[in-house]
Image (cartoon, rainbow, N blue to C red; front, side, top):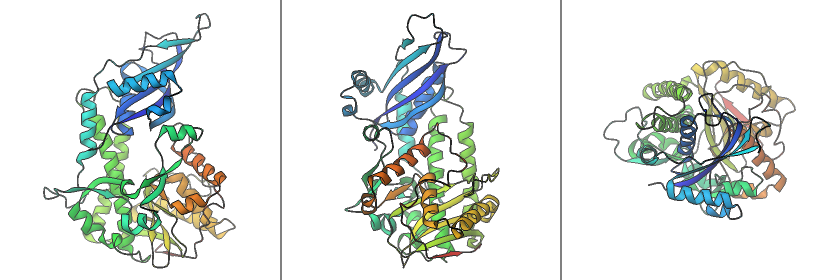
Length: 440
């Protein structure tokens, strides 16, 4: 059973027209401490609170991050709120700016609102996060042993870059961020805790992914490449499904949550693609999968796997991806080294082909292909683990640049510019790709 953490977050909020109690308030900074199982649940509760008390979110200043009492030792109010959250499950503190100059003070202290019961929501959140289900297309009541599956294989990839069973990944501790001037930092974690999800039963996970879990990848083997895509797509489905359950199945609060229309649309799009991939698996139509692999004979330094819908190509051209074409990318171990693999179903050709063509053309010019792929990875993927040897070999300035880029990409209120693939992070990865394979 997963344990509760205390998550800290901060927002700028404004009162709605219905909020008559604070009609002289221009805006407020809301500080929240919430004791809950994960950051998605913490964010849900924050939205619940603001909606219940007729506040609109203007800007997210700090996304949900795990905090400890030591993070507030020198901050009396923060320590007080942390202790309230430890005891009562939630603590909220506002500092508000008055709208009119004739108000004696430009700050209005709002009362912390902790008068609603969170127990049902917390219990349901735990249940949804831990129950899991098998996402195999043949799943039935015989799938009774749901396991913590790795979206990136433990033996074939993570163990290759680990040092004493640990890799570097993004830390979700607010204390770490404070120490690094509010920027994301990378921290060592055990490989058994990295990128797991309860999305398959033991039988189907073992049978389905054996070709990639226990074998090096042959970059002309389209079935192996498909399985990398299928696994990470299933993880994304699992994440979206849990979020929807938490938002819509808590009877006492479901009418108070933020509108889940956008979340439903994302989930439905992911399911649309999964049905296509399920058909490939059932009918063994692996030739319907497009791919390109960039192959290196050097040691693997970073492992990753993710899916995304490309909006801009490597030349900052808008792709008009109205159908949300889906592109997968993964690292894969090979006989001679490793490969950076992109893949997609032919139904996503429209945007994915343009995206890949722009990458190839940039790589054939003076641009360094290794820099292009490393920049794309850092700006497009959270599901990333770094070799401790590689990370510690970087200059401090290089580590800080990576942290800054990741911080900006993950920040909910910073828009991603259309030229995001054209700058930053040059000369860091030292990646060198000698050959490529594809079926385009």
